[in-house]
Image 1 (cartoon, rainbow, N blue to C red):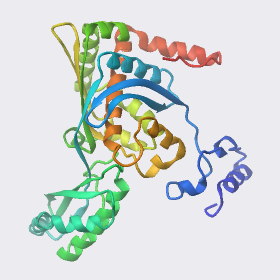
Image 2 (cartoon, rainbow, N blue to C red):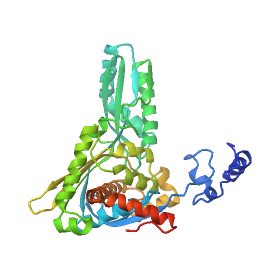
Image 3 (cartoon, helix red, strand yellow):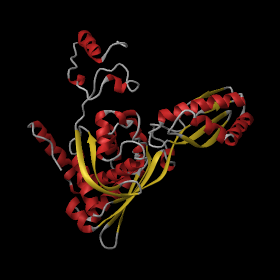
Image 4 (spheres, rainbow, N blue to C red):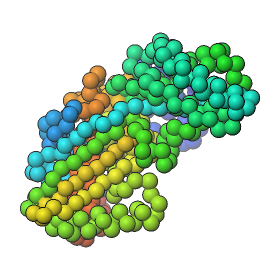
Length: 384
């Protein structure tokens, strides 16, 4: 099957398993367009795509009203975000800031003992410029900015920090660091090395994701007047804040990494729609939302998302449907990754407002119940 085309593979599967894959054979791309992105290609999975918005964003990189695509099969998800987007837009928009931007990979070097490990760590710090030059030979988008070695016994865990530009960057930094590791071994005579060792916690929940940026770290804040909360979220500011505070206490007791209601829901849907690495939702969903009740009855809302790994060039962003979704937000190509990160962050805050309001006044389960009834009747799902 390795040398076959998608139609031949589907035929082979039909012959050997009895499974007919006619629907997956309908694709918006050619096999040549995804070469290097997939193996044993048989077709494509079609996920329903919904649009929510507009959401007004007052960012350093995103400025204006945006419609946001969600690829999902979860009923009421788009509606939930729509409610929050309306409230944010009516309140004057969400302020967004990319406060940090870096991606890291941590190879591990193994030497004879701790003395040798300390010497290797010192060598890494003293030869940063040399290693940065080696990394630059492998990529047009990435740039090594720092190396932070950690010595444990005879092992040196070396966090290599990169600016990845508008690319998501994981493959980029893998290639660059592999070349760097060859130079380190040549210069220091270290026994062996491993390109990855879990220290960067890529695609894994870890405490390190709480306090260091992995991808784009985005801060969001906004003020919701009391009348906007009541008209667009259908609840009082105090009731909304109480629900958020209860969720914060629950997160503390669970030992959760971060405090939010459902960042992962919106992230997964947007990432699928826009050709992102969906497994990065593990890191990106570790974030914080907070609310303060103001003297005039309004709410001050703030969020911190330290791990938004996103890209607007390369990889899945080049596929036709994913490219269209990015272009919908003016977020495809060079110079747009930080804009995309700010739009995503503001949208996640909108989703928090929507779900907290639904939980606070009992609409959460009722909306799901209505959607199940509509689906059973063959009626389209609830619309915003």
